[in-house]
Length: 107
Image 1: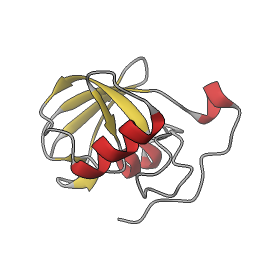
Image 2: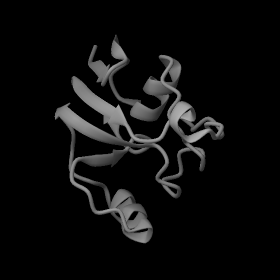
Image 3: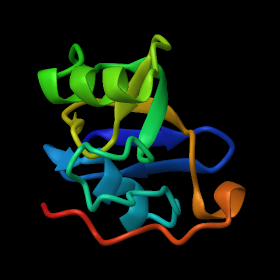
Image 4: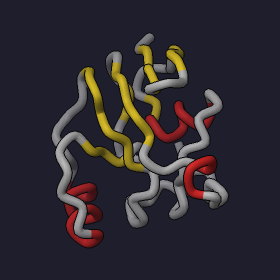
């Protein structure tokens, strides 16, 4: 099983192919997902620090473009499936934003 390492929080194993946003939420990382995992709000974005990850999807490119986000190494955790070890840093969390996480994304 692949391992997800969250900067300053720890490492955990996840089921192969699981959405990163769900892997984070299910392991105590209070990442935001205000649109419910529909790639509209970009609140679930993470900085990929290391590991295997694919290029941005068209959906992610559109979402980032609409929000004016052009930083390298950012991905929407609702669009990224964990298929290999990865290290990430969540950008927006309940703790650093003061907002509630949002509706749980679908599998």
